[in-house]
Image (cartoon, rainbow, N blue to C red; front, top):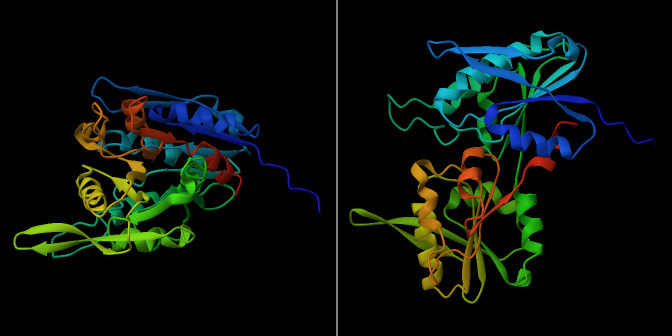
Length: 316
């Protein structure tokens, strides 16, 4: 059977994602970068222009987004809603980090599940000539959030774990790796992708007025333990897990998260300072471009790029 030819994709991108977009295009001759003029009126509202809009008629089109803050979402949504109406063959939205994913539950009356709100907004993206928009998201916080999206879009959930596996195989102590999860949620989310590694599961238990991290199952003694989770904010849970793992004899501890959010420069608490450091390696992807710029060339951080995976996803 003859191999199916790659479809030619016109890839637009937001300003934050320019470097990642160029990496994606570098992975495939079938991807051509297109630009949008991101301008503002004097009152601050967007004044956008899709360059060479006539050239994409009848073409496959994608948009690489970064919803890093509420302030940049509206201008990107405006472009995202405009592109499918330009008589294109199909439309794919690549949103590596779904930022409201951890706000998916209502625990008491009055809570607002903004994950549902964001999913509903994206579900309203107009159809292109080819039908519903495909929405590519990496390691969404909870897989059940797929049901928050309406039938007018096709959510495609990808993962960064293969990038971690490739990196772990290159380590000199690759045969001594144990995977740790900071809680049951992370174990449920990722353990089936990491079954060939020994595992440790941590949990937070209440002691008086405090919640303390304890090892629920597994033995880290003498191992290079890699803590795996979908995202990091302040990093407090990762640090507490590291302390517990070290106290139970872990040879060294590293961490992987797909999304390094790190508000208020919280990544600084993980930097290597002098001869003492807590984490041997800290791997993140480039799903959060502003973080990538901040931590470049700062041990223990290392960026595992999603570019190749995104290029593959655009051929689905």
